[in-house]
Image 1 (cartoon, rainbow, N blue to C red):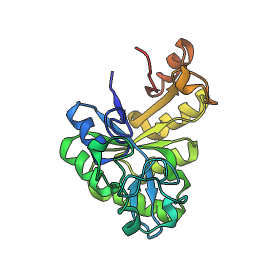
Image 2: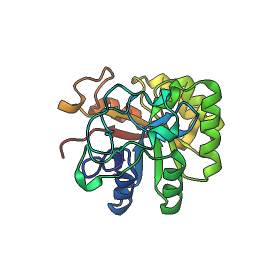
Image 3: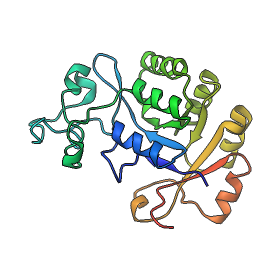
Length: 226
């Protein structure tokens, strides 16, 4: 069984911060899962939401006075906010991480960086710069794709990357992807629990996981029970 740190070790440190990513290294995770964003001036950062308001604070610890979208601000503004203090005073001073910083961390440690499918919303030009950044890093990366065509395109563009597919369960789709991706394919299904009550795709069960494992390695997401 291989475990991934969701947004880094987000139970112990502020999500998608270097503190959370370093905790994943210390705790021995094989994968760090994270979310890509891009600033108004084209800098790749790690952030789950479209806005910074949930996770960021002003440097005095107070909430931001207005909604701030990461796509609307330059990096020099984004890096001024505190991304640690909302989680705990212990993490005061954490800043929004650069994608390149996390790629360097995983390259040095041998962990795989699993990047959520939010990159699918990037424009073609931004997506190409994103792919070039990943390729130039020399780090071990995995790309989560919810769309079959995107998965195929990313597999061709980044031939060393793992492709983690989390679209709806369909044996024919998995068969086609396996033919294109080979042993780089990982198929993810949700575990039925309170934290996944909102999902629209089928939950993992004995029958569909057995079929999935014919074509890919199997991932189960949000394991809240053992």
